Image (tube, rainbow, N blue to C red):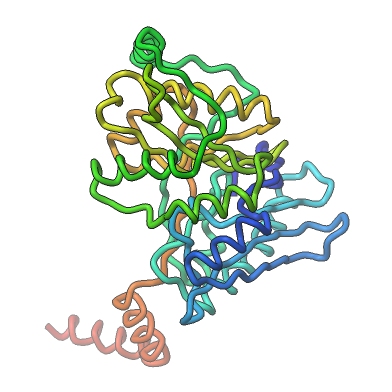
Length: 327
């Protein structure tokens, strides 16, 4: 789970629960969403989640989605033992649902949920991964390298704006794809559809132009007022990376999301060394999150063998002990 003092952060609204986001992922990636709620509701503890399943019925992460949405609400109590038992019971029910369906690849839980034991007890494998989370109600200072890049961008006439044409966003994403050798698997039409469906209160594009007015960096963020923001997409022309285009866009993202009432902003992972170094320079804390996979075939075989030998293991151990004494 989380540190219990942070349990209130587990019930913040997230854009990943919005119907428009869910329906777009279903259509785009051929998945089926399965909403799940555990608990009686009202003043009782409850756990609300949403699983995506593929054509084989296994739980899958939509590509480009940082984690599955999860919301945990306790009864009105400050007792740690009661919060703990509520989490274990409800997360255990969710874990059994996931384990019974199986996992395709891996699925991630949101940051602030750091008790993986109910999922391990259900037979799933859990490991730590990391992201940076900005508390937008708290002032932080970026390091000197960021400040230097920001001054450079401003001196060279770069400007940043909120909003932009899906074609300009797509062109900047392609620049990063070519430089890093991967594909977002998004078209201009995809970007227009998700932008139109979610609207500016939940989906915001940020764009940097050089002195000539050409779009050289652009990205899209998801957000919910009073809750979470998600660092979804970002692309920049390599010719403008050293001039501070990225730093300029992130400065505006933090400012604008704060103005929109976003409380926490997930910077979208810190598991690649170079990416983690760049994100750490903004001064926000590193936060763990749980990543789940299905048990390996070797582990399944070992468990099956132990299970089948269970009734005869005591006799085998006694026979082994006698043999050793005889030797």
